[in-house]
Length: 280
Image 1 (spheres, rainbow, N blue to C red):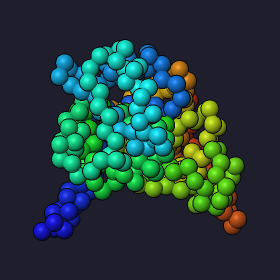
Image 2: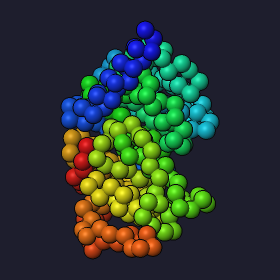
Image 3: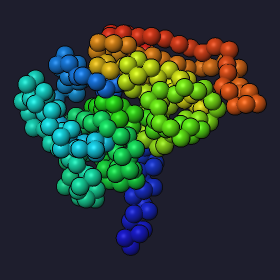
Image 4: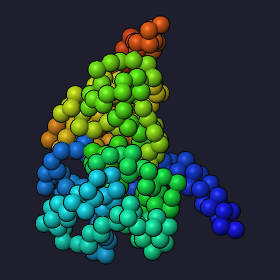
């Protein structure tokens, strides 16, 4: 009976995730990492449209030191809006706790901290936590994240690793076919790939590699102290720096040596207030 319930639950998660991008009432507030200005956080709170009884849940599981990671955010947010902020560290708590997952599903603002995106997904993938985040989003919540918390928004999540180079580099130094590693993210964005710390860490080669791997998707690089606010097919830029959008490479090929090449692609640089087209 227990195994049958688990199978039914996982099937439901899959069907729900596939349908949610078409029906979600919520927003995504995706920050590229770095410093979060009070003004940027005000925009996040405004996007969430919090009512008096609403609360905020922080998910710190991407962080290597989640309690430390959680510590600074409430201090900043409560200067702007003194309401309840809960720390749900599912890395140290039962992911099947119905009380916690119900609370998560009913949160109006969920914030995913930075760290390692794979660490976060290792905790939540194929669990009630994953389903609760999707349910909250479908019902109108704002799902926010910074750095690794930005990367997890995508279905095809960039892990940061190169498959053809065993030495980790924050920026790729090669444009090779099948060099970029992806794993399954939250899938709140089914057809857009997010990269973060973009200009600060010069991640153009990494995003071009992602575009070559999935040429039918939109690839978005968000710089530090900058965010995109996603609702439906559009994303509004907020913050201090820029957002890069890549899409639709033409005549995409690879050489016999595995080098990527294409004739041209859509390329745009956007700043605060600009609205860009994405694929949810």
